Length: 251
Ligand SMILES: [Zn+2]
Image 1 (cartoon, rainbow, N blue to C red):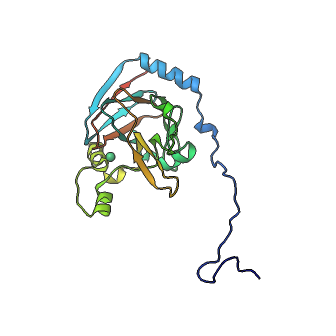
Image 2: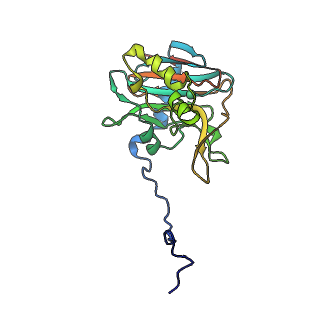
Image 3: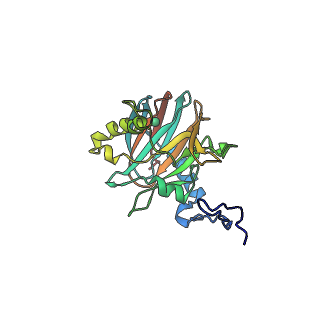
């Protein structure tokens, strides 16, 4: 009997049956919004009044509140910048953004009409993306795209784990600092929505990578709150500024 080239040491070579990929969550109805409805909500919001505007300088984070139906536009105001965003239900902060399930329901990178989902047992849409100036970037030749829900926020613990050096100052610490005034702690800061960040997985080893963001001054992303929200956003230390404005639908 042939040994199939196996010398008898280690595991016998095994041939795996090739199977086609099957999408696990193929556009569930709740994840598919009416584009016309959200376009309409967006236009109404943009015709409403500006209720808040703030700048988030690099190496800092800010928080703001949104009522259901409010629209938030986050704009790159200087250089090429990336931001890390967290969401909580304003009325029940146990309910917060669930990056992993959002990834499964939509994709690794989000764009217009994708939704941001909350944790279990709630699993509800917290916000819906209604505009994205980078939507035509698509998936590039390296498999990278923008606005991911695959990475986490940068943090000093992982920096020390990898380099052995102490560091103070990361999106995790800025977010932690910013949410304190809302009665939240470091343990409430969760995996983020990485806006404007360009990321992917290497084709050969499937390792997480980042590359220079295509975002330039004036690029923006907009979302509409599907529930009353507390939002926190940090501006990553590598870049410059992000600004945001919130507008409320016309009564
Ligand atoms: Zn960061």
